[in-house]
Amino acid sequence: MSFLPSKKPYSLLSGEDNTTEDCSSSEFPLHLSAKRNSRYWKACRTCIYSVVIFAVGTLLFFGGKHYERLERQQKHEDILSLPGRVPVPFNYNRTFGEAPSNQTDEAWQNIFPPKNGFFDNATTDNRRGAFAFYHQLHCLHALQIGYYEAVSAANEGRRLSEDFLEDGSNMGSAKHVRHCVDYLRQSLMCHADTNVEPEIPGGKEVVGFGTVHYCRDYGAVLQWLNEL
Image (cartoon, rainbow, N blue to C red):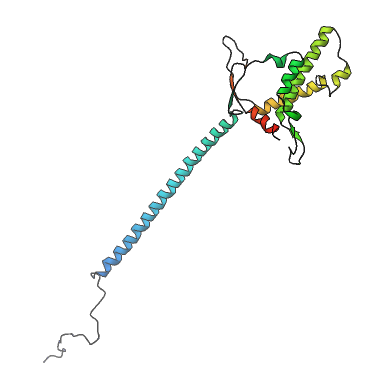
């Protein structure tokens, strides 16, 4: 006789599930695979972002360098740009530099428009005004007159009166000439004409004549003023 309970085969109770957590089941490796995939794509995104940031930074760096180079080039071109686009050969005309006469006076008057270049509503406050280059031509004409006044006085052995020398209303007076010399100096420096004049053969100087200069269309400006 045995006091041990008899061994009976174990049978499932009704409703009891036979599924247990088994590390060898198919769900466990899938779970690990998903984690590995997540880490993989995270690393890929980090790598892609790094490449994009590097590429954008490189483009910005070299783009900035290129822009700086273009800016310097543009500034260089602006500084050395010519006053205009109309080719004008400079030929010597002695008339304008000769002693005042009817012929020289007519030559000077022919390069001035009616009213000596003045026109209405020239300024923002609606005052009359004139283009600066007409004032510059007027001053150059004054230098011609003043020069020959002094030459004439020297040739005749006479002294120019103080009234004449300091009378600003006289074209050739010393007062007016002083004004014109400094005005023309500042005007020339303001425009800084960058037309290149070649050195004369066998010398170390330039004469300017016989050289094509690129200028504004002087005739077109005169026409515009004449049509006002």
